[in-house]
Image (cartoon, rainbow, N blue to C red; front, side, top):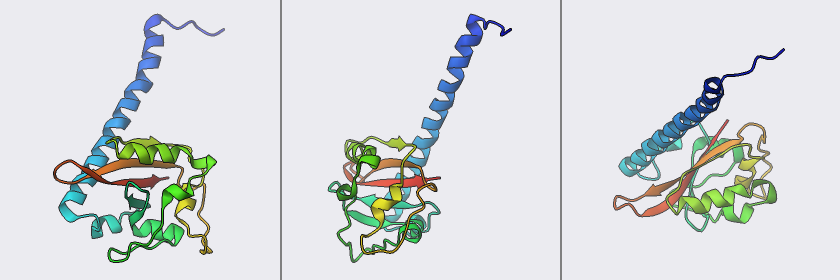
Length: 164
């Protein structure tokens, strides 16, 4: 027969996952802070960020992609240079299956960071219609969206990093 938990055990069972969530939020905030510092120091088109091992994109408030990491290029075939920002807009690629991304993109320009999980094929938004590339929809199912601000604190861009 199953032993009845004490009140303290029940509370501990609830508190432990909450503490884990708080730690995860702290780690997310730390990662975002480091990226923001790096972008302020080296600029949006930083070689360090370009060579980051996870797919990453930087976008304007209107959804236009202005920068992608080599990892995102490798996964999707999308290549954007500093001197030639092509009109690739992620907001035009929102579907029912990835609608939560729209909220995350909008929240970034309100200064909010969003961590999304259980995404379905999020990298497909970065594949051009004319491309023969196929994104592996099971590979990256989480993403963190965060604001990028200038020295004065004004948010000029948003960024997304896709995580396995």
